[in-house]
Length: 261
Ligand code: HXC
Image (cartoon, rainbow, N blue to C red):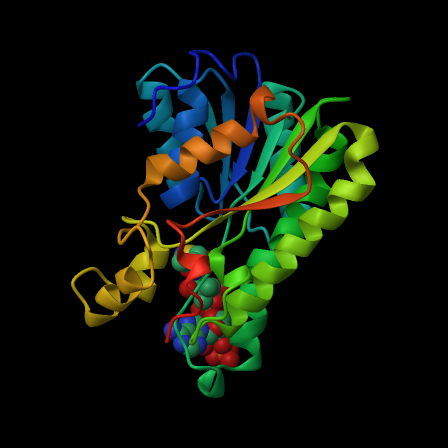
């Protein structure tokens, strides 16, 4: 973990994170809490969200878990208002909830395609729409979790590529509409991240597909969770105060090499 950030960087801030019960988003939640933020973790499973929050509290952080599926706007709005009651106006909102499975386009049902678009793209929209009225007035940050698939076509990922490309344009569009409200909007676009459900699904470590993934990355390794959390922390900090409407790749150079088989 890089120790280039000053301690207490997010002291007094409220960060709300969807999909925060596991993977990238959980590590971001832990990182933000360690930097002083009160963290609301929203997930489909209350047990998992509260489990992540409990682990944060165990090391002295402030966190609480809330249950909602990002596909259900009303449930999401209700969870967010509980989070607002617990920790006050939202300074940072991270739309991280995502779904993925590996399927060739010819074998993908319309419902399968729609399910991932609903979770990733509509879920990001629902998240930002539901949090808008709860944001700290005049100074807040929205961050979406996109992926390299938004700019790099990838076989077996038609649903994810379409959804993540939509997320990039959503963030860029909101950056135009919401700048006057003091809302900064950005996205991060990770490539493969070790120790995540996405990677286990796409290319289990040791599998031949893993070697193919690594061959497509100039830095020849996956990211680790802390590297993603560092970028999220930077983007939500004052150091990034003029970065707005941008999608930042964090991929070891993968998108420069083109698409994978
Ligand atoms: C083909 C599949 C399938 C598969 C599901 N479906 N899995 N089709 N191959 N392996 C189809 C189903 O048949 C169904 O269509 C439709 O998708 C909905 O499936 P459900 O299981 O009913 O949906 P649901 O319970 O809502 O689950 C959503 C999910 C699931 C996305 C399918 O995998 C999930 O909950 N995932 C959350 C965790 C996750 O995916 N984490 C990884 C995120 S990583 P029919 O037509 O049969 O009704 C990530 C980043 C990627 O997104 C970037 C990596 C580099």
